[in-house]
Length: 194
Image (cartoon, rainbow, N blue to C red; front, side, top):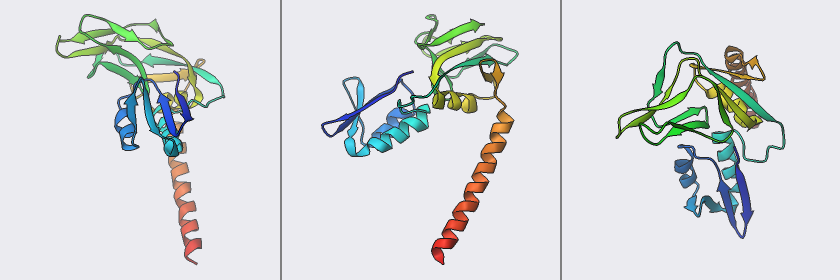
């Protein structure tokens, strides 16, 4: 997955993979779709980078490691997504365009077991996932891999290099961090008042 942000001549241009949350939020920052890129006022570059980090887990400046993620579908039945797209967190895995056209994988996605398929009606195609499906999402920036691991949903078991992510531990840690942040903010606000 590639995110490219460039700024020149007073404009910040952003090229990202499609995510349904991005256009609405980009427009709120004054973004306009022009020639295959979102264009913003250069004064909003940091806000645009924050938006990309929030939606994609990265702003494209990750010089850090790339992570290959394994996603195992854990339901004991085939299921359909109520849409034409399958997302694991912010990452678009596959898309269907028509009922009989099959699922089209995004670059860097490989099916190791099972299948993704198209179903539904002609007017309302949807994407299906077979029981036992295992996907590999290759070379994700670290921030995106973390977002996939924490936001993929309860039907997917996410691991990196065979190491399963402990969701309960992550949720517990996030709760503790939020509580500590609230304590710090209380102390700082008290300090300002005195």
